[in-house]
Image (cartoon, chains in turn blue, purple):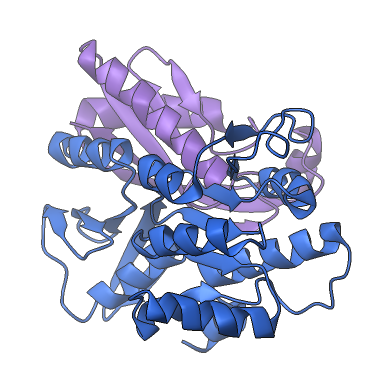
Length: 238
Length: 110
C-alpha cells in the first residue's frame, strides 16, 4: 500500500467516513473509494465497476469480486456502529444491552432525569438533553442507527427531523400503524419531504410477532441488520 | 462489523505509529476463508520490522509464519498472496475443531 493511500485511509477513519479499499489482485493497484464515489489512489475504477463498490460500502460487506477479467478485493473500513435511542423507557432498557451485544456503541437520549438514570441504564452513555439538540451535537454518520421510543411527539418528532438531516443507515420510530400515519401528517405539515419521511421505519422493527420489550428489541435489531446488510438471497441472485 | 471496524482502526493506528517512528511496516489482510476460519474476511494484522505484531489473521496458529514472510515483503517492497491450508490433523493440534483454509494478502506500506 502506498503511503499516501494509507494516510488517506487513516484520514477517512478519523473523520468517521466509510471507505472501500479496492485492490486489483492482478496488478496490485489500489484505490480508496468514498461512499460518495470519490476516489483516490493508484488508478481510477471503471464507471461500471463503481456501483458494485458503493453497494459493498452500503452493506459493509468485504470480499473478493470479479469484474470482467480482473479479481478485486474490496475491504470496507466502516466507522464503529452506533445506536442512538430516543427515550429512556422500559423498551430502551432491553434494546440498549441487546444492541451492545450486537456490537453497537449505545447512547440513550432523554431530558427527563427520572428516566435517564444509571440505575436503569448501567454501562450506557446517557445524554440528558433535548433529543434534536443532542443528535445534532453527536453527529450520527452512515454507521449510525437512530430509534425513537419515547411515544411522546414532543420528543420523537424533533428527533426524527434531526435524524433525517443525517446519513444514518437506520431511522426507526416506535408506534402503531395509526400513530405512524398521524406522525406522517405532523411531519409533512412541518415541512418534511415525503421522500425523506419514507426513510423512517415505522412501525419500527421486523414483524416477528414480538410482544415483550425484549422481543421488540430483537425485532428492531433484526431490522437494523437487514437494512444494513441487505438480504443474503438478493445478494446470491446478483 | 463494528467490532472488526474498531479492531482495524486500532491496528491501523499502531501501523501509523510504527511508520512515524521510522520503522518498516507490512499489512496482512484476510482476503478469503474456507471452512472454519477464526477471523473473518477483511481482518488485518500489521507487522513492524523486527517482528512486532498488532491484530491477527487467525486464532494464533499462522501469525508467526505471516510475520516471517512480512520481513521479505518489507525488504522486496512487493505485495504477495499467501495461502494457508490447515489439514484436519494440524487443525486439531492447534486447537481448531475442523480444517480451514485462508488466503492472506501481504503488502508493504511504503
